[in-house]
Length: 216
Length: 216
Picture (cartoon, rainbow over the protein chains, first blue to last red):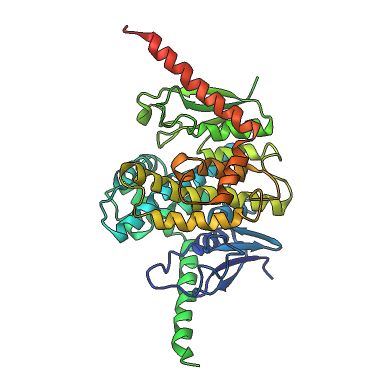
């Protein structure tokens, strides 16, 4: 039996399907060949129903035997210790992988998520657009010169960075050919396809259950 | 001679003094008793003068002998491997420290930095204020029940979270007594005071040099 359990929502509306962050952990387990189970908390009352496991009311979180860990970025770094497919063991390559993993969270996603939030609640051209252009422009320069971010091969840093960049509004932002090729390259990996299909299937099955439930 | 070198700017305007993120790495080294040197890149032309070391044109970055690493969060996790004062070695306590370190970067700072940016360029009550209230409200609930975030003691997670929360506009946001007590507790530590004073002194010395330079 698997000791790894990824927790996600039992249902999600169509908009975020395929983008719920349990996908990051699924994808990592698929890349590393780590067996895992998926369990769910209710979508209804999600703001408060699992605060004891995730203090901001979000998903995913991870069980590794008795260890419990939230934040998808932390879950990824935890999984990366289990497999050098996710993070190389050579100290220089490991440091490079770590820095780009954190860059995905704190230099790129820290800009793309609030920009995306302002975009859908107001205008695509908003107060964060200049910051967004600057950061994604710098990243484009990096990606124009290499296939993967760290260690000369696919690592957990690419998994996370590609997951941040593949959000449709972000992917459509500006003209960044190297970045687009990078996102296409990462999401063409079989491990991504498997993780994505599994997430979609979970939410679709939940649709059917909801439709079949009827009044009590 | 120290093998750790923290790189920062050679000068900064008054506004960000005391808040430049080299402080995170200085603070960590002071907490852990790790010797370190500080070196600088020019403030002028900073947008392009060190892109080969930090692809977004930012500081700090860290040398550890031949290892080179950017992103303050990655630098902190790297330093945390050198000292259990920063991160405990017990697996459960380590996972808890890791998750809260990432939470500081990706659940809190991902909201506070863009909110702060919108606030200074527009209104303190802006499109991200609701998100800010929600996240800081959840964190207040956590901090009302514990002295430190992880492992029952001060860790690198607290260093980072407190550094995120001590930004004046963020600290003044709403009424959050447990959070305020937490920030006060963290920044009362001698290692913080030393790191802060050293950063201030570097920039003040640079003022004097600039003033004394005169026309060529």
